[in-house]
Length: 79
Image (tube, rainbow, N blue to C red; front, side):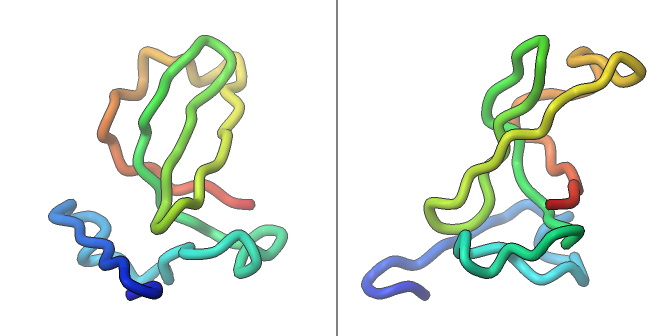
């Protein structure tokens, strides 16, 4: 709970995860693993949302194209 906000999820992968949730930008550390949900897909990358107002950009390389992902998918990435 942050202030007067409550963040809820029913995504089984997030509920069962051992990876701590990323709730604030200040908590991110280089190389830290984070799990986020895909909210936008373009040919150059994915926009991921984490908890609270935290969002991040995941660049796609040529080996893994945008067709491998879908909106709402939980993905693990490192900072």
